[in-house]
Image (cartoon, rainbow, N blue to C red; front, side, top):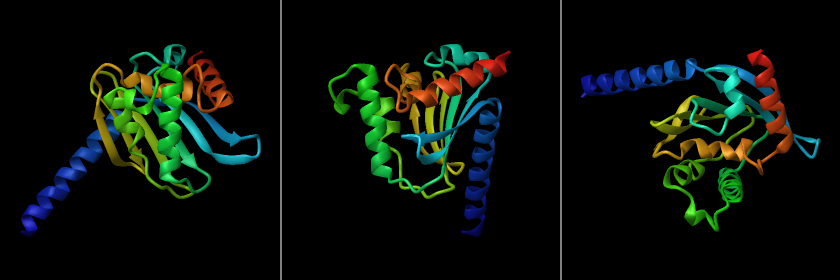
Length: 177
């Protein structure tokens, strides 16, 4: 029995290391403090790309990661509602029930989080969308061709926070040179 636990633990370590190596191919291109109404610090958002110039076509199928390190406790259901509503608004669909499967899969995966914790949304074109909390995988959804659209939450026509969008993209493009 102990050898089975050892093999399982070793397997988990291998896959966690592999996932981290995949994410390490992306570099941090921008970092912005997210404030709501100019008063409430929600946390620090970062945008990771293989090439910072990819910010110019952020909603296309390019590898990317959006991270948010929380400055306050967050209710998981509030995050789920916000993700779903922002996607519905940006995709011009009628309701949450009309969301593409891979987008709904990830939008509904958020959980309660405490100040200091971090969420990472990782997109690997043609492969997967994934949500991590503090480096631990919460959900992985296969990309069936629409995974890049998840980033409409932050970078669409009606993003969660327009100033955050503008500042992240401007910083990333400046970093690209």
